[in-house]
Image (cartoon, one colour):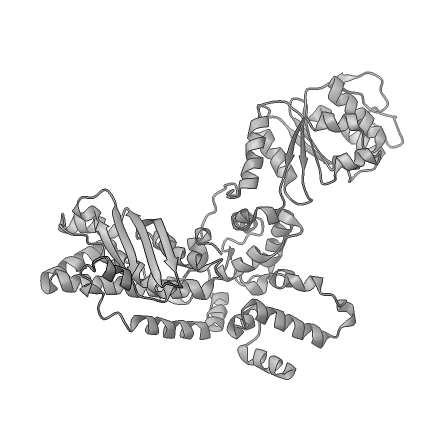
Length: 539
């Protein structure tokens, strides 16, 4: 998991007036009310004590979020876990946090981080309620950053705000360092960080308690009705460079009537790219007609493409217009072009050369104005060598080629695609509350996806059907996703007993969760006591 992949709706649960961050209840507070509270505390306690209170509040908040991020996700690296803190600050509406620089070394126990806080709610409300300040006042922000980083790094990290909007600066900035580095660089006043020693042990205790209640939370979720929300009809986001390159090629060729050959493995989305290219072209308002060339026998395919005259063959009781004529002034997409017969190849070559077709049973050619796109998952150059595909047709089709990468080569797009399909399935299955639970994301990320994007969509539809109250938990996912590596086991599964398969499955899940029995039991859909009994039998 990467910090940039965090989505608010997948980590915050809104259920019947209750808001929770994976078991830890949250409450929406008014920043303006906090500013009023700040003013009262400043009047009664003074600046030093007020700063200490707000810093302690932020520190506790940051520690709790760091513990939650560790509990919920499996991170690609300790750095990603740390970067989830600034991302959480942004998602929760506190400030728009940008990490300017980060250096951390667990060996030397040294830490240095610079952050920029834009639109700090704390600074804004201070200005509106209390006016201009002569010192930085984002005390909760520095406390949060210090608490979160200290929990992740395992050492005391302290953030000090240098610039602040409340005192007239354009943005708020802060620097975080380990205690030793602050001492060496000239330790500023950090009295407001006192009395924070017991917070981490308290957070760890709460974390253990939350883990023990995971199954109870799961049962409660089944009974809760999610708040209604509307889906925005948007395309899936593209983060990977390989697919950005594909879209760039599509955009470049779209304005021209150039023939396009789209290649790639089955299920990668070749027709999606064809439709996208058509949509960016001058023909966008005209027909886009697709035909699967491998799905029809030669006679029917010829009639489907070029049309026929009544009486041309048995069953042809009336004239029929073919797809090439139907798509006139539009685009025709020939999927699985590598599977067409030699006879169809000859006729298709004439269409490309002369821009005219002849219906089956007729001798009079008909002019057409159509753009041709084709797709295949086969290696056509190899088919040419074997004499099953015409070289001249190949070059006519492949004036411009777009190679669509496999999903395993564009893993950055996996989560945006999954979220896109969830929105679409929500409408298709009439499940307005359908969503992915955060614990399911790691399984989707680490699966190989041999069936590419098509497999991802099918898996999510199956998981939606198996979900509880529209929430896709790991237990809703197919077994192949949870322990996909078991499909390649050397010993044939048909020769093994049911008990052996059960033990193998249990061991695979335990290994996947790092021997975390609570998480393993949740995936298996059994209690921790049952899991203990089953593993004890094996011992």
